[in-house]
Structures are given as structure tokens and as C-alpha cells.
Amino acid sequence: MSFTLPKKLRKTLKRLFVVLLGLYVMIASALYFLQEKMLFLPTTLEQDYQYQFNYSFEELFFKIEEGATINALHFKPENPKGVILYFHGNAGDLSRWGNITEYFVAKNYDVLVMDYRTYGKSSGKLSEEAFYKDAQYCYDYLLKHYSENEITLYGRSLGTGVASFLAMNNNPKQLILETPYYSIEDVAKHRFPIFPVKQLLKYRFPTYQYLKKANCPITIIHGTEDSVVPYSSAKKLSEMKIDNLDFITIVNGNHNNLVEFEDYHLAIDKVLN
Image (cartoon, rainbow, N blue to C red; front, side):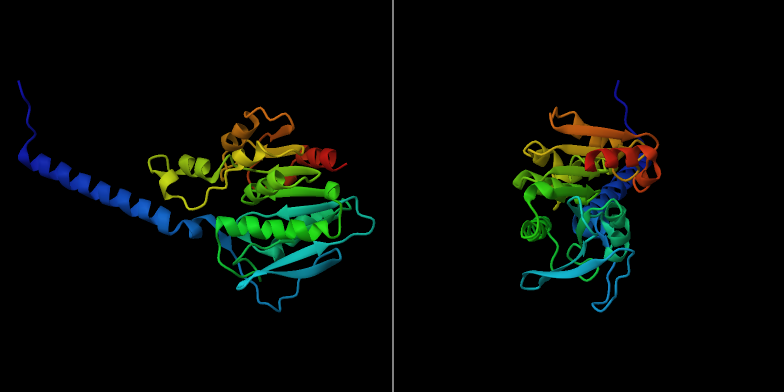
């Protein structure tokens, strides 16, 4: 016995299918064409903006190539224990991140932190390759002033992929990653599970590939309640059985509040001292 849907119902279902397909294509197109606006949330600063912080610093401008100049801050306390090259998250600019990195200056570490292209006073066209190129430029700058075994790489959120890339290609003292991701693709799959994100993404930041090739000690700090980069994405990094990797869980920690937890301070004090 065969069953045939009423003609009117078939037409309704067909229209519904067309509408859903159209929405799917529209969202997929937005993921592809607008992904930079979704991934990167820069704020800009006037070129004559005057930074004000609690510790002494030098403002730097690195001309990477024609049309691309990177603005950076170099904090220099007296008698530093070493230097931290810090790569910040996907939002804001150095007027914010300078204040955040003063946490490490207070621990008597020099800190160099840069603004990515299109952020703050920095200029140039964004691309994954540009992130890595500019980061290496900053690392090479530090090598003119410090021994490589004095350089700690620190990545936060978006910056964890950049810091991991540097750790793979250089020999720093250590690598610290706060709220890292397995890869951007992994985070995108978590947020958009029904879309072919692998084919849509222009940015990969495959942290898992870089950590496997890094020779320095690696410390990962991640909160269990992170609503931006899932805890599970970072946890996958610890499951790769990397001998020199220490994974620290901050119970109830979210994406932007780990500094409020004693376990975070204990972890930082341990790796820096």
C-alpha cells in the first residue's frame, strides 16, 4: 500500500524546504564573507593617542612592509627577571591590553605587546600569514636585546595560535597559553555544527599542529565555563600526549575572568618563578 501526501501539503513542505535552504546558504555565505568581522573585533586609536600606564614603557612602531606598520609597547621595570612577548585576544587595542599586561610587569618582567594589523595604531592588511610574520618580527626584535632563554611567549585567546606558531619556529624559554583553542576550525565546528566550516574558513590557526613541534615547556590555563573557546577544545591539546605540556584547569573560570581565581595566580607564579 502506497501513501501520498496531499498536494497542498507537498507544496507547503516544498516551500519550507526552499526557505530553509535559502537560510542555510545565506548563513554559510555570511560565515565566509563576514568571518573577519566575526573573528576580529579591533578598536582603533588616533596616531597621536598618548598611552598612560602605571609602569615605564617605550612605544614602538615596526614597519613590517610597505603599508604595514605595527604599534607595540615595551614595558621595562628595573632589574627584570626576563621578558614576556604577549599576544592578546581578538578585541580592543593596546590602551586596554597594556593595562592587562602590567600584571606581569608587576612581577618584574619586561613585556612586549603588539597590536595586530587594523588594531589601535597598527595598519596593514589582515591575514593569517601576516599574524605570523609580524609576531616573528617582534621576536627578532627581542633577540637584539635579550638571550633567547630569557623570552617567555604568552598567548591569550586568539593570540594563543600566534604564540604557538612562534614556539614551533624558535627556542624560547617557555610558552604559556591562556584560554587556547585546538584550532579555529574546532571552535567554529562547535558553534556552527551543521555548516562545512573547514571549507568556509580563511583562518586556521592550527594550534595543535604547532604544539607538537614546540620544544619548550608549555603551560595551558583554561576555565571549565568558558563560553567563547570551549574547555573541550583546549582539553584536546592536553590529550595529544605532549611530554612537556602542563594543563591547568580553573574550575568555574570563564573566558575573561581567570585572573579572579587563586589557581590562576598560583599557576603563573609557578611558571614564572
